[in-house]
Image (cartoon, rainbow, N blue to C red; front, side, top):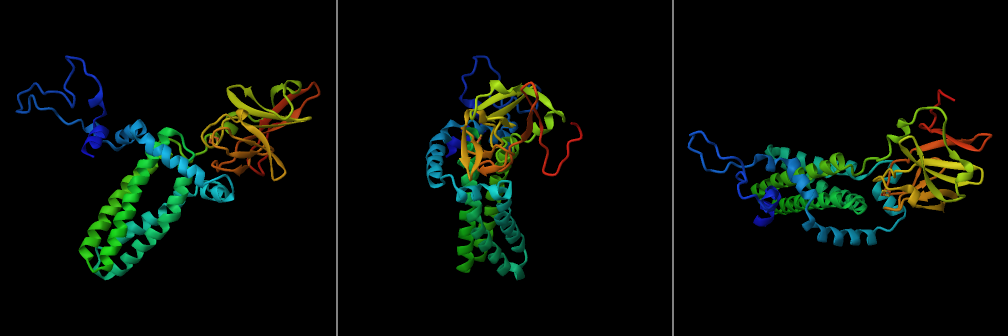
Length: 341
Ligand code: FES
């Protein structure tokens, strides 16, 4: 344990060092302040972001990641139940909304512990936090199972902290029930610390590594309004997804006879190449399935049919001109009007 903590805080300790390199943890002061020759701590290594980045690059976590990920994928086959866990019916991941319930309950419980008359309410809040942590964990596991390796490394440490918080609050509840109020309060305070550390890594996962955010949202806004030439209709194979460039934007084009469906080629989930996916029929509609994690989008408008993606895939309107040129223009949100024609 001590070794792994040292590894996280001082990753550079493992690198070979040149013979005349500067001291490892800071410089030796040259002025006569009494500290000459004593190594100074490298405080930057303690910064939360530095620790989180080190977790991203920690291959020692991969064995645990692989085992848990395989088990999660087996337990969560594509379907309505898994889609609900991802948050497909809500149009955004369900996990970030659900984690507020246990965190809110537990933080409130610890604050109420300062008021002796409110300790019963505190116990009720801890129980509510433990119960609401179950759906929070289930949605988190579903989302985590469809992330890339660096995200999964951070995610598994985030989950470990949250599991620690659940254990501490569980023990706090037992202690309170047994009449050991002081122990219960100390355990709850430790639980909030663990939950906050876990929440920081959850934020790193979502805001720095982009887990849960749409990776294609900008595409619909980057193309100018109005019609643009994309390609010749005769160059598109019938029923097969292909990639075409509109300036620097990569678009997916699927031809069916005389109509062409056009979506952003970068999957909204994590940017997978949709043109390498399969065109399939779902609920009587033509859809494309992402080759990376199986998100399925309706070709006509980019709506999500199956997760893990929860955000609509940016779609383009298309038309064929008299000389057989396929033209496209961004399809704005429902009810939006194009100013240009
Ligand atoms: S990148 Fe994950 S489903 Fe497309």
